[in-house]
Length: 145
Ligand code: ZN
Image 1: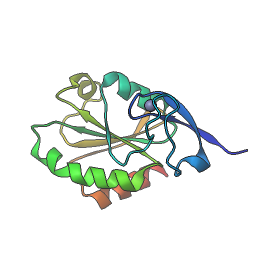
Image 2: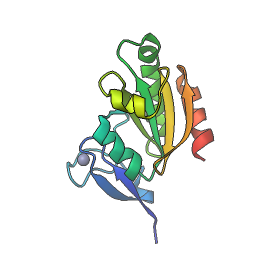
Image 3: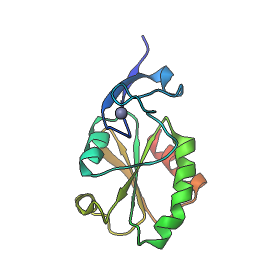
């Protein structure tokens, strides 16, 4: 029997059940029919964030950032590159701490950019400061194994 995983859609945030061996075969959402993995980090509000963190059965990497933060904007292309390398084993999302201040407060984000990795609803690692794409990938692999 093949294992299946709960994958939360980055568009409509519906939870999909996807066979593990189908993850890399460009699965689409049963609800909105869009691709479950797009190669781009999903921008989430608080309600969507909670769905992804609580329901996703793959690790979720969060970039806490803000539009006024220079290092955050500099890291954005590296985060996109890391997304292309880490999907579909990891879901990459972004939280704009200016637009969604509740989440920054809930997780006591003191500086941005901050990356936080969640597994099964629990934060397992956190790293403040901008990183290059290769460093992001290595850091995630070290903490999601
Ligand atoms: Zn969807």
